[in-house]
Image 1 (cartoon, rainbow, N blue to C red):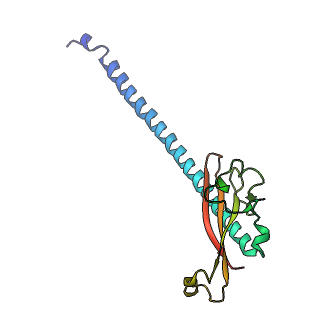
Image 2 (image 1 turned 90 degrees about the vertical axis):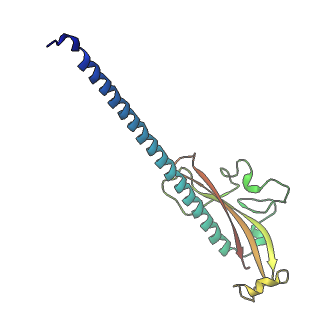
Image 3 (image 1 turned 90 degrees about the horizontal axis):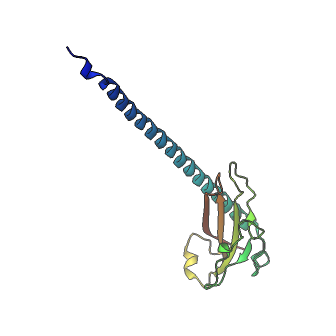
Length: 176
């Protein structure tokens, strides 16, 4: 038997196997870290969505407590309460700096784990009278309703980091 021709073959095979195992290990670590980042981003976006939902509910509660919409919603738009912008104008909720200053309302309900508290604005849209909308009488509303004030609520929620932001809008009608 001649063993001298086989010197180094075992070393070469073991190094190739070690290289393959190292590549598999590095790949699994990268996959795991990617999955963790995806889960963290998903959690942040869900948290931002929940914060925006909280702001929407707080704004609806505020609207149900308002006595006179003409006093609370001036044309100039102060403190997060305004009348809706004309059709050709820039939307109020799209104005720069709105969500960081006094142009929006901080929602009174606190949300744990968010980077910024949720905020909202309320825009008065229109008054719908039963005389102008005769089909309203046959809806689930009572026939004693004379008019319904229609508002657009825009809420902004931020997740666990400032990169996760959600803006939600809803239309809300109140009988005054």
